[in-house]
Image 1: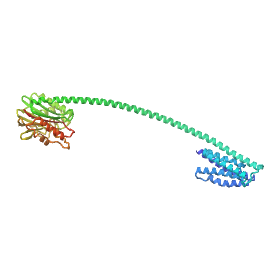
Image 2: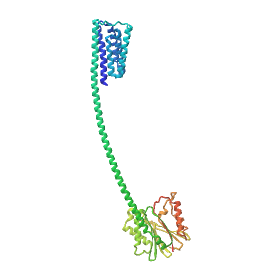
Image 3: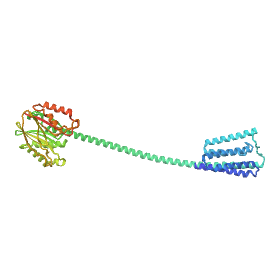
Image 4: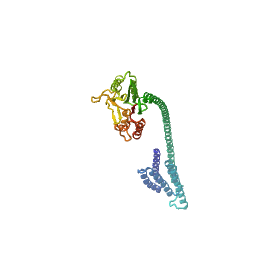
Length: 468
């Protein structure tokens, strides 16, 4: 674009130089009228050429004015036969090369109209100026000067055109090379992107396969753990007294046993030692496998007793010391320990001792809570204010009902978000006197269905029984 502007500027300046040059030529040749007109056009053309304003508009105005200059000289010199007519080529060629084919066609059409107009004026005799005397030597000299001027203009135009074309081809070639280079860079970038994407796809596929493999392993492990827990649950249930054993010891009984998980830390135990029936309710603080294992240890300890301690309190102390000495179980895990209720039964006389246990006797007078220590078995440190383990003796009849419970029932949430509580349990069992297991079960089932929240936070075990 800069080369095009330079070419056009050179052309327009060349026209100005020709105007001045022909003034010098016309005066010696006696063409004073032409010299005056050239002077006038020079005074108009020079400001249009050198005054700064919109470049594109300026170039159009100068080209149009050059056409007007040529037309006016042709009229002054007699019409279409004036040698100046050849200068119509100048605006046509420069317009074509500088503004493109469309503008070049417009200027060619304008030159054609001017020539036709000159011809018509000449035919009709409308031109006020006489034609040049072509036989005069001065006119020959003038014509020769015109031919030289037109030739110089054409020569300069062709020379600059070739230069512009070469420069344009070089620019085009540079642009093509730049485009090819950019295409090559884009191709390389595309290949790199494709390679990265392929690698990412491979990595994603590998990660997905690894994830699937890990998932399968985890599912297999989970299934194995689930199977193991289910098997452990069967083992735990088999360690609990069966219905056959319970029927041998009790006239009527009811068990509500609901671990929080598949296995739990609640155990109930029934056995006979030399005429003394022992009934124990065990509540290990941790649920799940941990509670189950400790509960199994305690029941195994009871099964392997060579002699029954003289009182439930003595047995509780032995268990407390056994857990602390052999397992150190709760010293590291928590400070709450294992809760327990133990009942010794001989005929219709019972001895009860509790380690944070929950127990009741329901007789004809109502519900009698069984007193219990607030200490837990296996607890490392007890406060000075805590109540020591102690035996409590009671005489009961066959119609009296003994209830032993873990704290899972009284601590369970109701549908309203409140804790069930001891008062509710007492109110639930107060009508159990002289009753049967069907009515006991019905009472518990009804209350649990109507009031228990679905989410269970602890193992729940309640044992109700009376003696034969």
